[in-house]
Length: 359
Length: 268
Image 1 (cartoon, one colour):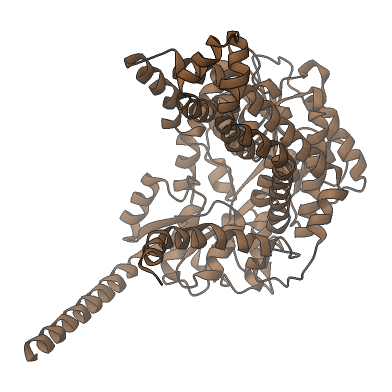
Image 2 (image 1 turned 30 degrees about the vertical axis):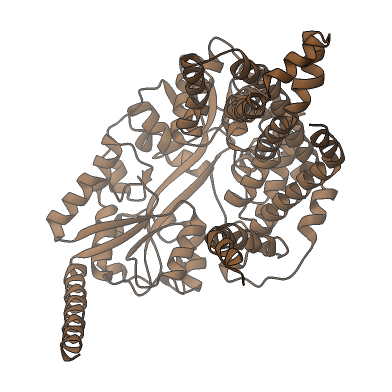
């Protein structure tokens, strides 16, 4: 009996020891580590960049990913104290700040802060009560790209997607919000609050003879364009740069005269971040020209919020020539937050349009 | 409890427990969600509502696309049986030995590859030389290919169980081969045909991946609409309500068909 007690006690001691050891091991590790929450393959997890950052600061970067913005918010709500750096579309920053999911930033900790484009940096989507809750990182546009071998004259209007010359050769993304916004731009309306939704609906229904099929990812877009299914297709600016550079597709991105859909992303620091200092250093590195220029040159990236970084790109880079043109930027309509109710109405409208395609 | 009852309980309890936890619990949660104004995950105020169910009947996009799904289910099920039944008959009655094994392997082979891979490989074949990619027929082709093995295997099992001497007896009493098939083979293989119909029709009307990849502009059905409610609109309650309405419709169809089924089963 006594032997049994002894062995049980020693086993407990052993387990306690292991637990303590595990705990201290983890704390020691965390001092030189930050945890980033982002989409997979979206800049922060480039291997060379993390090696570069670790060499500079000694901080190791680990990642966790989300597949939707709702998932990102859910992760922040359910696991406080887990993440340091969180990527957020501008639409969600104020919501997260109100909920206390992210912390106000001391902008003096970011040496690149002064080089960021003020229109993005000080946007009311990022600043609350005079405090910045996100550092503007990258931005991009949604409009369309065309195959320069199939279409010789560069289209300059959204109407090109409705041009009968491209009937059955148009690519479209199966997304309610994006579809409605493009049709709103094409009919000369405010894309965030189209006054005449019937007009938008009719415009979309007129795509029946135009659309070849829907794409849902950059990879699919590339495949369909390469196979000749599309001559012209709705697309994202950063992806267009990648399709041209990495996939060697003969495509050109267009910002039509009616304007384009603009979005921008910020990097935030989570409330109760275990390593807020390291997080700030990482964010500053992410907006630095040294990282950005290599990212855009080697991989293809959205436009940087850092004007100095964009200016260092090669002369033929889309992010410098097109998105760097102030005349183009003036035409951009920035995406506004969408309520759940509006989301549902959009989805219904889009489902109705798609049903009319199949009739 | 008798010893036999205890044995039955011990044997079946793990399976029922597993089903209750993995199937009934999530389904019950979804059923609960379908009566709420919003998904309760975001910390929002939610209320009880029947709106999502009334939406199905009052909004044309939902009931019309439900019909499109049922129509697709009918096409695919019919084609699977038209192609699969003769194949099963040949396998059960005319091909023997090694050849039968080899052909079985060929039938089961598609099951060993991922459904998504199979569908994507169809996009290549349907583009060239058939040129029907991104159309309604492309969806039917993809789904028939995916579900044909169910039809062949279930029909085969009931066909090979038919005693050949029954057919010989019929023939010796003066039945033509066609009469023997119609009066003996077909009725006796009815259980296999029915199993095939259930196994194919139900998943096909809920399919969303094949329509989306192969169907182009013709992809819209209730399956893709439900997927959209979950993935892009984040309206889980409506998505759940549409799913349960679909489930209800399937049950109604089976209920309506049950007198006929019972009759067929009784004959065999």
